[in-house]
Length: 289
Ligand code: FAD
Image (cartoon, rainbow, N blue to C red; front, top):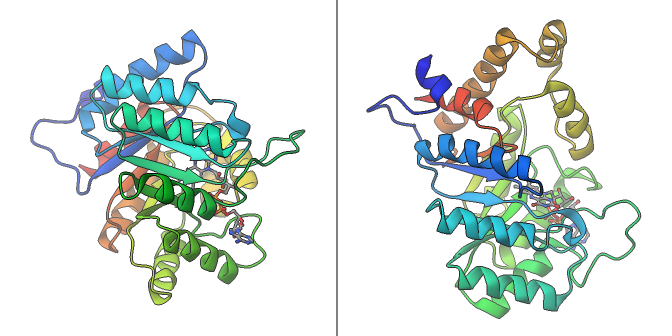
């Protein structure tokens, strides 16, 4: 328990698979301090890399590169930028890639992004596959390119098969690997990976794991991004409300049990959506050690 509170892994205890963590770029001093506190704790779990999200419509055009540089230079982490098509011209994206290359990045996460409400222009690239092609054309094999995958189907996709074919298109465009949208149903991941393999997609597909921090927020967000929270989890969470030791322990147990199943079923690594908080991710990692 004390390890869990302090965030340092018990000596000699090992995680069953490599992990990576996702952070969003802080914009205020308060957020910067929170990220610092989180980093100090999560670094102890030796992530393979950490990724930094990119705001819709280029709104974090400088926040993301600044955070990537900070994580690399001050924390010695292999910080990986997310790049999105939204609102970014070819030139802006080329400049960002040059910046990332200059600070030593050799991996990027290439996304379409979502158009913020009120914004009319999507930028020069329409789909993530176009961005992947551009990165390959400009930088050859310098960057390892990760793309997004949706075990429960992208919310805007007409049908699951078409969405899977679009996923395949990103790999054909040059992606080396994928990180999935979060889910709470391991079977959706296994089925997705099986179907991708049947289509000849052989890149690693790493499950994205969402440790549950604030359930009310998570429910709202899950509706937007098309991730299903099983009814049995919803009902138990509702019974406890948003806070308290019981709900945190239940949430961590559920997510850790799913992680174990994913790894036993062949998932190569785990990518955690930390939301810049240490404790929910640590609680899951603690259970996996
Ligand atoms: P795409 O792969 O381009 O697909 C988007 C939709 O278009 C899908 O429905 C697909 O089926 C369809 N499609 C693809 N190609 C075609 C085609 N040729 N013709 C017709 N339809 C097509 N968002 C951010 O803004 N910033 C981030 O940092 C960020 N990080 C993320 C990290 C991960 C691991 C994941 C899973 C998502 C992330 N997102 C992020 C969210 C993501 O941008 C959204 O889910 C977005 O709606 C889709 O992005 P994509 O890269 O999957 O798009």
